[in-house]
Length: 178
Image 1 (cartoon, one colour):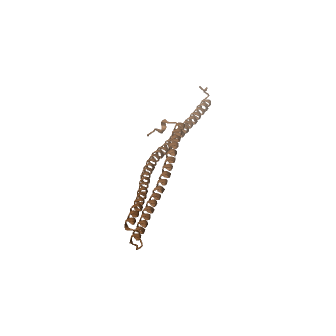
Image 2: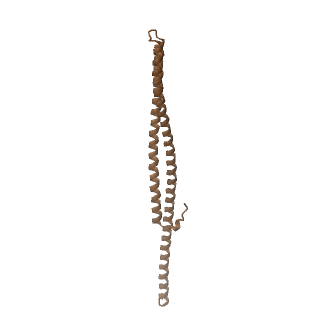
Image 3: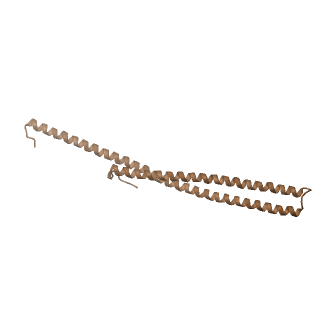
């Protein structure tokens, strides 16, 4: 927004700058909140990865133990071992699938949080730029106002000197002041 600083008064510029500052702080708070949510989702993804790895590791250990039992000499019947293997491995596969779903959901939430952070950062950057622009405008208005006041003071002082000079010159000539 281009604003002619010589057409605005200091109070108006200050009020507009304060509004822009409030919006910038609001955007910064929102960005901070979004970054906190993203950190939470990052932790959730890390936990889900760990749970999935644990489930896969547990399945591998159980499966190895079942194969050892199949190969042992005093094992129960092969059909019984195969039934157990099918039941246990099936249950563990369900655990792994559930852990994978949790991980997928956590990654989806993480992506959404990252998108929200980027959007919040963009909004904050825009509002920050607007706030800085209004700070510049406020300084320009203040300089312009100070220059006008200074010029008016100088003109007033010059007028006063001229009046005194005229009165003094009139008094020296003996003229009556007009």
